[in-house]
Length: 335
Ligand code: AMP
Ligand code: TRP
Image 1 (spheres, rainbow, N blue to C red):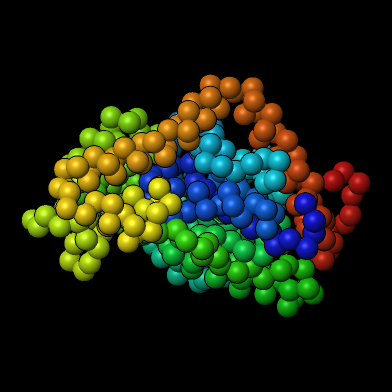
Image 2: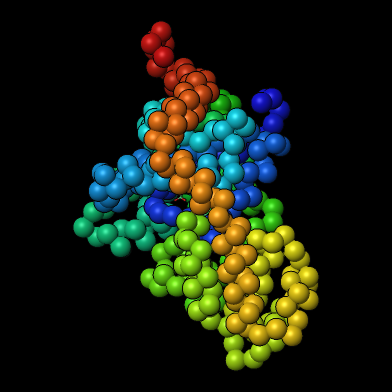
């Protein structure tokens, strides 16, 4: 890895299985980035405890998220995937950054307000401070680009503000990170309400394809997909269900929308839905198999996350030491 390459960094909360939307819209586009950029991905287990989660469940979900990222094409010879709590420099930096963050700024974060409303019995300090840990996650690596969904843009903006403030007070230290919307990445809609985004928090399981669903489940969900009362397979306004199926079909087969429309010219919705289901199931089969292999091999997973955390730690110490020096902490040989 050369130093001129841009550094991409992103964190993923271990909240469950990726959906076809996460996969087509985000994760599968990360693999091809690995040749142009150095990519660091981590499972944000420290962020996950800001809301109540059973310890056994957190452990399990963290490993599952790790294995899913690997199965989706992130190559550990080119990129790093690590577990946040294995790299203590994030939390160490976040303490220093806390002292360059205003109470008022954190009070204005919409995610904090939403989550406080949702969990009124547990508005803990970690939930409030979450964006500062996120800023530390990013700034500790001097990341150039941070792929995040729109809901995280406010946190990214705060990270930029904190970095500028620190640089202003102590001298140039942090690179100012940019948000990053990766190329391609179609938006995948719910199979039941095709005007709504496919989301893992949907209450209706038929609305969502999970990347680890088996073939029968995938086909069943596509057969039930909501379409319209016409019978023409065409991509146009008002045909949200069919548009979504065409988008998905094109994304997994690599064909254009026009090619897909031509392929199904004159066919019924039933045949089309089955074909989409089969194409998605075939496309996801290798991901599912690779995931099953990885999740069963805990020793190999451990080897991977341990090596990656070691590399991330060594890299991040450079920034932490610089920061500690700038703020006036007495140097020590211990780090
Ligand atoms: P989330 O699951 O909302 O935290 O999103 C993680 C990533 O997946 C973000 O980059 C989102 O933009 C992307 N993503 C989530 N749902 C979809 C969807 N239905 N279609 C396309 N991209 C999505
Ligand atoms: N807060 C992000 C989310 O909920 C996850 C995250 C934590 C993150 N630290 C990050 C994303 C650093 C990008 C960079 O989706």
